[in-house]
Image 1 (cartoon, protein in one colour):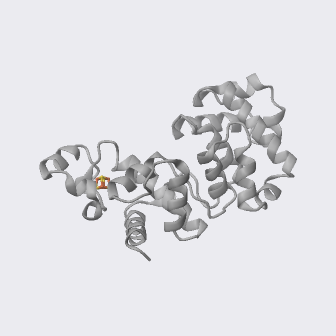
Image 2 (cartoon, rainbow, N blue to C red):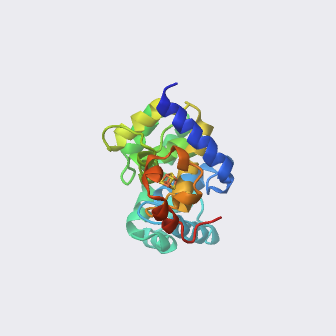
Image 3 (cartoon, rainbow, N blue to C red):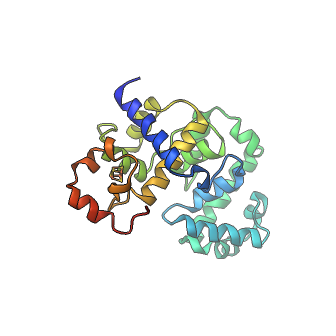
Length: 235
Ligand code: SF4
């Protein structure tokens, strides 16, 4: 194990001890349907808006791929309006619903080898690399890598990561540095997102951060600046 791997494992242990990772919106028992719909709906919007859209689908009895595919596009768009660009996302949900149906259901789709499933997802309109990897890691429960802006922010601040910031460079780097365990990788990604929303924000609250002593960015801040950035921090 090299120094960067040790740092990643240590950071994860600290974050897992500091936060309740179980409050992450996707738990081990979350149905694949909720995860896949959420992964598509959350593009370019916040999770709060996704929850409103999912609540609308449930209330309308439309929380099933069969109903989603059969609904008129405009009606589906109305239900998911809180997430923005509703017509585009309604179309994406219907394309995804058709994909699952043609594969023979979630079980058959997720039984595909991970590389093949990823390629199939990436060939589906509206599914880019991050969404495909979220579906793989959280929906199909495969030991995939999800990279996002939160991961880049935190790991760059810790002083690690690939030379270039392209998605595939991060994906390969994380795959090489994280244990190949799906549960660990889900929790790792969840911990990073929670931490970046709570403390490691654009204006970070370094003074109360459990990673301060291993963080290049936090260590480089002058003490007065660190205190100033902590105004309103959770104690
Ligand atoms: S010390 Fe500051 S910059 Fe570093 S991880 Fe913590 S909050 Fe982020």
